Length: 246
Ligand code: BGC
Image (cartoon, rainbow, N blue to C red; front, side):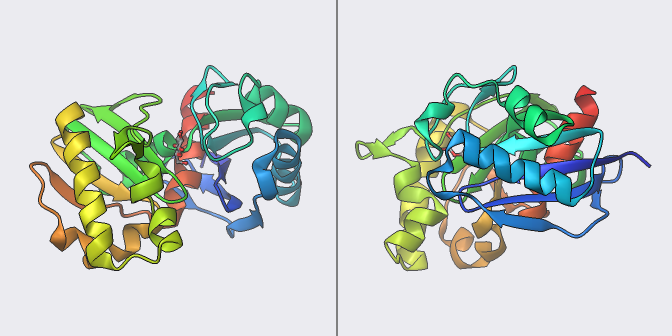
């Protein structure tokens, strides 16, 4: 069995678990430490170090990160401290945790897990995964192959960043009814579909367990289905990413 540590750095929590990278199952308890206020590089790295130490883990770990990460370098910072931009996150996290940490965009990680073991299993064509949480993450797979770092959370809707209108955080902040939220999501999905024309859309993130409340209100050319791995996708996908890279 190939067991790796998967870590998911999110807007509110940094989570980790040991994962069987071949079956996608979590083989330990899932641990969570709140994301430090401001998500400053040093503070986040320290929490990742604590998490790795708590598993007494040695080896290669995968880490989902809520920004564009190209070849280990952070390129954007929407929901994390802006000083992350330009940082070698693989180096930082590996140095503090004393194991090799390979980082991938969090939505890409969730997508990898869903495509292998969840709602996207065996799906050909263009599959779009949208994670609706603190922000909006997006990942696209063409015949099962990931095109990394697709960023559809920041397209402009009514002059504003889409994730400030249609993420789960936006819904909660504004205390929107499901009907009102569905209207915002509809507007967003219409724009997204005009850009990428997916065959299938998988809705993940914190809100994916409540799809009964809003998906029936949405009209879409592409089929839309909820993610299956719920809050495990990020951790599982991160571990799988590291497994595939190492
Ligand atoms: C970031 C994405 C990330 C998403 C979910 C967005 O603000 O730009 O890279 O995947 O939030 O965390």
